[in-house]
Length: 193
Image (cartoon, rainbow, N blue to C red; front, side, top):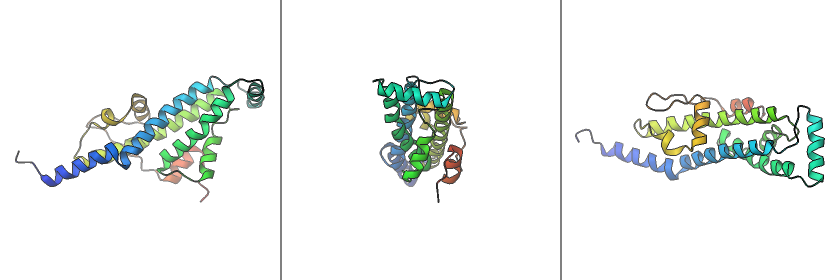
């Protein structure tokens, strides 16, 4: 092949390895897992004693916990882990303890089901936006390969990618150019710096 270029091949080979087993691959796996965990949280929301009044939700959930119901304890066990995953996914780093606590406070067990699910929907969109940025990096590093979507994303992450505005295939575009501070503001969290 007269268009063969050893340097381009090596660059593409290294990029594909990074997306399979390197930092980029780890980030994609983290996004896939966080998005799956948001679905777990959605399932647990249905196990909470919820209605449209937060003070009643808090009392009902506490009563349930005191009488042996597992809805509240299961939800509480998942929410902090999920907040850590989303903070890391959106910022690209673990974030300070206060950042993670503020994220966790966005999904209080006393919130209404609608509030909880809409918060999770927004987090899912933000992670989808991060996946769009990784796709652009992949395409740039691999001389335009368009297999990112099918190669790296689990089905639920594919849905999040699409919800964030991602397009599949050669015409895809859209990189999140938002700063970490702007991403935190969209999440309703101030980074305290």
